[in-house]
Length: 79
Image (spheres, rainbow, N blue to C red):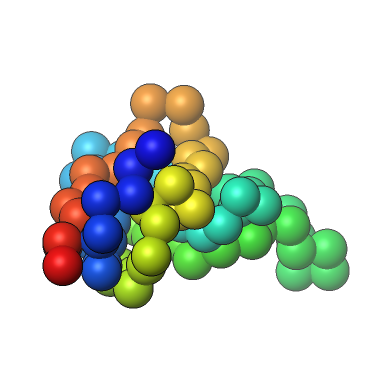
């Protein structure tokens, strides 16, 4: 797995993304749904936005994108 004694993970949505991506656990879901019936699960990142997450195991962080060609870059900060 990707458990390298990491302390933090920085995830940044690519500047070329056309839709937000969502970062979360294994149940992450990017589909927004509606105000009456929201479906999104996780933290939404627009293009070039980032989030730092304190972690013990990087394999427990997942990303879902609304558009198949959108993505993220990441950096593990090791202990």
